[in-house]
Amino acid sequence: MKYFLIAGEASGDLHASNLMAALKEKDPEADFRFFGGDLMQAVGGTLVKHYKEMAFMGFIPVLLNLRTILNNMKTCQENIRKYQPDVVILIDYPGFNLKIAKFVKTVLHLPVYYYISPKIWAWKQYRIKDFRRYVDRMFCILPFETEFFRKLDYSVDYVGNPSVDSVAQYKEKQANRPDTFMADEGLPDKPILALLAGSRRQEIKDNLPTMLEVAAAYPDYQPVIAGAPGLEPEYYKQYIGNHPAKIIFGKTYDLLQHSRAALVTSGTATLETSLFRVPQVVCYYVVAGPLASFIFRNFFHTKYISLVNLIAGREVVQELFGARFSYQQIHDELGKILHDTAYRQQMLDGYDEIIQMLGKPGASQRTAELIYLSLKH
Image 1 (cartoon, helix red, strand yellow):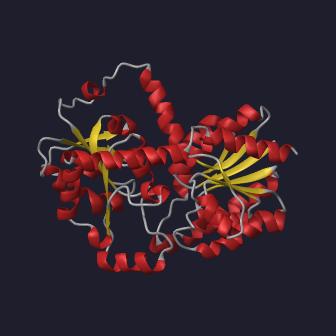
Image 2: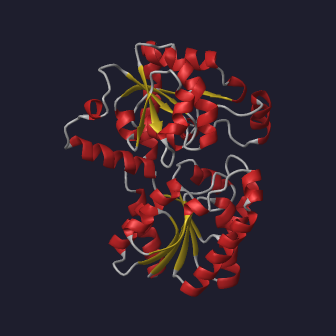
Image 3: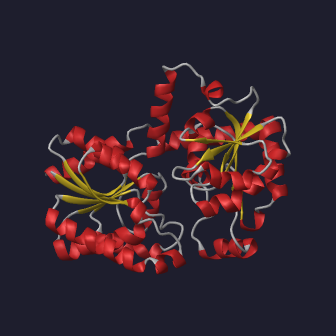
């Protein structure tokens, strides 16, 4: 069968590549054409456009690159029209993908499947009408999403979480290897404080300086920064200054495996940190913090920003963002997870609940099977 996939960022490239590999196992005749990245290209098929040419985030960048975005959309539509796939599979990236879904359903009348739901449970719940009209099947990776969509009268499949798969695969490989991480990276025999300051330049600019200041108050621990893919060491060095922090690229899981605690911006990293059972402080700077906190409390449909707390349905980790983002609050919370044994254990127990809720690895395989069987019939 022929599959057209659209992933608009690095995480989508990863999850789509795993799904493609699983589809090839089910369907040896699988033929792929896609908007995506290097990981998808490595699985095989035709890369129409790289996600790096599509990654415009925020109102101003989108406005400045509107012509490029519209051209990308036209290119995508024409490619799908000519390719005539058996199904179009969308991976997150809602601003672009929902417009493509509308075109595919109303003009081409082809099946549209969505893998990894956009986070409409946080805000923009009005988008549910687009899912009802243009998406034939939704495969979700967060357990609470099934209940959320059920209340909106839209049936979805929970297939498991790709981060569970990634961490399980990493641990399986590491079990058969000698542990040489500390020596390989030239790290002294000193407990590690992992700093995961985000994947975008603005996030790093906003969060890393405060993280480093807090880390400096705990000299018995060595701060190690998880470098984001696509960013150069020089970008980090302007914020590191004289701080004794090391940057490590492409080894975030190794870093978490060896860390005593972590300071983490929101996103998938908070979940990955919990899967490695590393106590964490979620800290995320936003402009006009008090106003941002007010907007979040009054206009968003969820109590939490971190996947850890969202999945648990309660506060397992502290979320220091908006009005709560400050050196002192981050410092105090880090002290508790490092030195208060009972407090630390309480967080680890919360992690264990989340791990149980997420279920076993195999999200890509389960999704591939559901897609293949539904198309076959």
